[in-house]
Image (cartoon, rainbow, N blue to C red; front, side, top):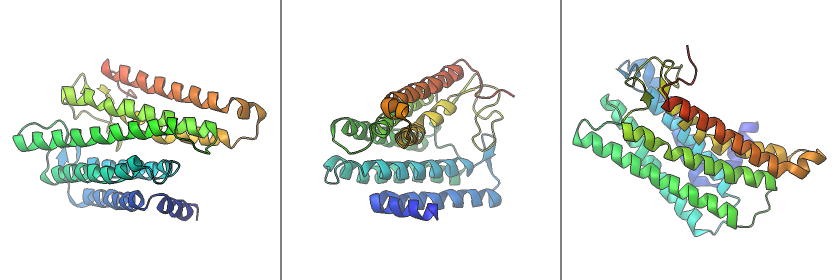
Length: 266
């Protein structure tokens, strides 16, 4: 029942993102089903695991932005433009990831042929455009008036900022054409996530940093629901401190990975 209400609200807030998010959830399920019938391996895991992760992440992202953008003026031209741009960006991303999986080759860090290099570079350009738009949306939350409780507003602002920082952290992986530090990609990893259990893996900081887009705003919203006089007085400060702590934690994971240390050592 709660899920039905949530989806109904998402549809009300942004139909485009809602339906594309549902489509991505369908792709997520489809990719998981493919793993039972297509047993090809790439870098030590089934070729359809990565597409499933991307489809799920994109769905969560679209639902999140549908929720937040509703708080901005509905006639804002930037928000309207971003809705169209985001759909194009993620069509490109999904076509690349699913298409390369079908071919049995890597979508990321793959420059083995001019065609593969073009796909990798196009994905990088597309996701950079999306990240820059999120930064602009974040700026709008700083300058536009809203009726949101201050802790929640700060949660959205800072959640987006941390998202942008660790989205650009992806360039570190692109620069070295690998996500593993200390060994070639493909070493034994955590279940499904596949983060290396033996070496540094830059994907951990990238993943957790990107999901600041959910964790930090949710913290701010929870703080704003409190009836405590102390929390009501210092709610914004508590949200800001949480965001700083979140950023420092993910930064620690990044430094740890750069030094060749795994997220969790086995």
